[in-house]
Length: 150
Image 1 (tube, rainbow, N blue to C red):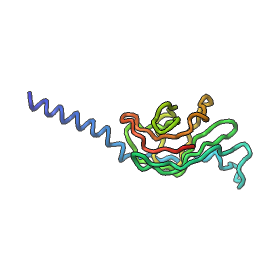
Image 2: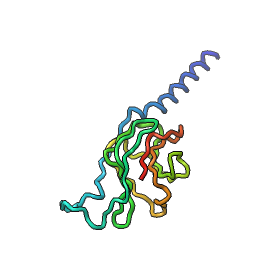
Image 3: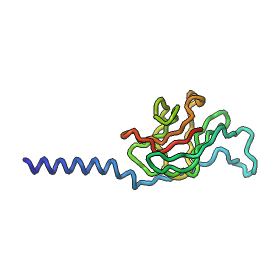
Image 4: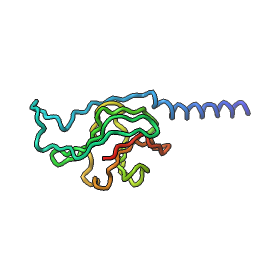
C-alpha cells in the first residue's frame, strides 16, 4: 500500500511538472501582415491607417522583447506585436490593463505566438483611454512576464 502511494505521488508530481515546464520548450511563430504596410506596393502609408501609440516591451519575470503598436485601420483598432519574443509558459494571456498589477484588465485571450509579428483585433467596447498597458501574463501563477505602456 505504501509503495502504491509513493508511485501515485511520483506520477502526480511528474504530470504536474510536465504541465508547468513543457511550454518553456515550445516556441510558436507568427508573421501576421502589418496593417500599416500598403497592399498595393506603394511606399506611402494609406491615409486611413494611423499608429495611435507604440512602446517597447519591458521584461519583468522573464525576458520579453519587441514593440507593441496600437493601430487604427478603417475605424478598427489593432494591437500589434512586432519583432516580439518571449519564453513560453503555462496558459500565457495578453491583457490590456490599467497598470502592471493586472487588475482591472481586459483579457485578449491566449498568446497567439511567442515569436514574430502578431495582430490582435480589439473590440470596439474596450476603452483605450483607460486600458493603456499591455501585459504578457501567466494566469496560473499570476506572473507578469513583461509589459508595454502605450
